[in-house]
Image (cartoon, rainbow, N blue to C red; front, side):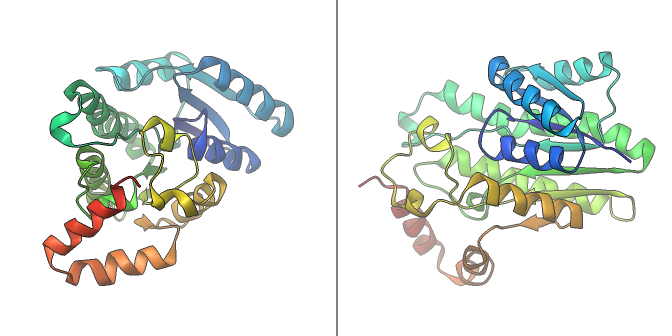
Length: 258
């Protein structure tokens, strides 16, 4: 049976690669991002190559009521969402007190509020049908505090916690929730978040490899997917046993520009 998959932040990076992977599997798509031109070009290519239905909805999800507007748009098109991929998000570098609070509020709106609202809205139909999958793109940043990216790390901690909690609430149903927690990924996120010059991104992984990790984990119904085994060991078996001040120092050093 063909699924309809809604992917936010689908115009580039991990979202774009997830769109390609789902298209390769024969899924129909609903692609959401701000850039209509990029989405239309991607949609046309996927329709031609894979003979699937692709709907495009150009929308800025960092605004209030964006989730309700997107949900209404899909309802008006008669679309039933079987798989929800909350991929849209952004970060920002610098000391919290020196950053524009409006930028951080927009980040919280997109990374947490819109994600939560979309999950709530589309989960209703999944529960009625007793079928569905949700993939929330989080980050390995969600496992520790992040000096110089304080709000971004905190938003991702929310996503990882929220995803696991509702996954447990849905245990016993045919609905799964997975949090994809990648390390550094070679996407436009670096430039957009003012993260150039950080050593952390010298060995960034490809968006395709991260997307494949998330897709496979979602298909298997896993709670958490970390694309780098060494990072998984560090975050789960080393960091929790280190003194908190040392963890904060290490985290800050990773975010300091050379």
